[in-house]
Amino acid sequence: MTRWEVIVKYLGYVLLFNAFFFYISAAISFFLHENSLTPLLYSAVVCTILGSFPQIFVERIEEINFREGLSISVLGWILTCFAGAVPYFMWGGEFTFANALFESVSGYTTTGATILRDVEALTKGLLFWRASTHFIGGVGIILFVLLILPSATGTRSSIYNSELSGLSKLNFKMRTRQIARVIAVVYLSLIIIEIALLWVLGMNFFDAICHAFATVATGGFSTKNLSVAYYDSVWIEVVIMTFMLLGSIHFGLLYGTVTGNKMNVFTSKSVRTYIGLMFLGIIVVAAKLTNDGFYSWWTSLRYASFQVISLGTTTGFATVDTPNWPILTIIIIMYFTIQCGMVGSTSGGLKFDRVLLFYQSLKRQIKLVLHPSGVYITKLENVVISTEMELQTAIFFILYLVTLFVTALLLSSMNVDGMTSISASIATIGNAGPGFGKVSSLGNYSSIPDAGKYVLSINMLLGRLEIINVFALFTVLTYKK
Image (cartoon, rainbow, N blue to C red; front, side):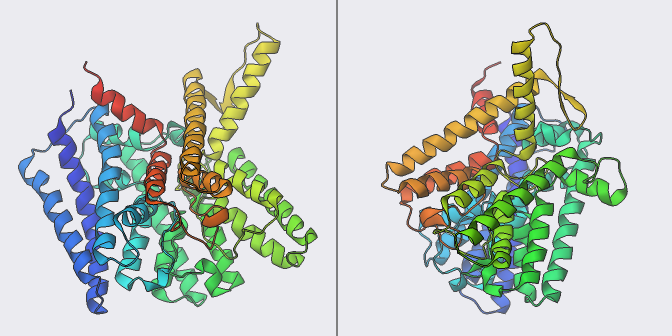
């Protein structure tokens, strides 16, 4: 049985957490005398009121079941995305309702796709709010709620299990709250360090904060129309590339590296393979650009490194526009956009660990066909993978590809060209942001019809919630027993 009052109580926590960032954004607009003060303050007050009522009138619950935990996770994301669209819509400008919702969903899901033709027309308060949606969504809204919930093991476990992939917990024998703290500490530490480095390298403090939020969250919202290309600084690009990579690696492994745990970045075969493949992709793209006469070798290497890492980690920052790049380079970058980073990170997409697991499972099945009497096991990072997890991975792959295909077909039916339809589908379900065609790195999604923006908004949410959780929610809510 689903207790809706319990779900509403915890959704209230989500609204209150968002209200905190609304107040900060409103304060920025207040001190700078900006016309975005009213929309931001209104959003803050409404979230505070709606979030406070359940805390006052619903009794504290120590235990919730998995059905309720799943509902809190999925509905929390949906509610937050609608709440985040309010200040955009109230402010006006380019923000119709479809545009406001798209921008909000894109921010929270750390997709980084934008409908804005002129980002710099936004006030500082709205720019900070826009960056804050990346910060909030980066490690999952629910994760922050886990840290403030009263001690209730069952509660945390139910929400946590529905928020993070089972693969992300492999070999990390910690309690739920310990894992949440580790992820939060790593996340905040990376952001603070990057802010300091960008500031030292000449980026103003406000831009450094916004770009650090977007980098570590692998989001991609910039405060500039030209994205990172605006700064034309190799060192700023190197810092951002480094933190995009760090944001796409399992946070538990990053924590283990700093604390001297045997589970760390250097001992992980998955990390070595992931970075090795990305390095290979960079070299091939750079070589192709040089060979085709686009740029000199070093310029090709600079642009290739940034674009492959940016889209391969699902961040979406840009230092150059890519519509006219050779088809081979586009295919390579699209591959990395689909594969993306690792589980247990802020990255989106299929996740590299799943790709490895799928490959290992496929090898096992081929061996069984060739040697039916043989006994074979699938291992990932020296952990034996159960048949159930192999099946879950296969189902996820199928759902992911079907969703991608259906989205591309729907966009094509709205007279969106083929390249844009395919790349927009890949970029949104993978939470990568920019694609190719009309939605290229320095482009935007403003040309997509409103109906298409709603489809892509759903796509972004499905990608962030890992698809199967959404289907599971409808299943458990209609299950009678």
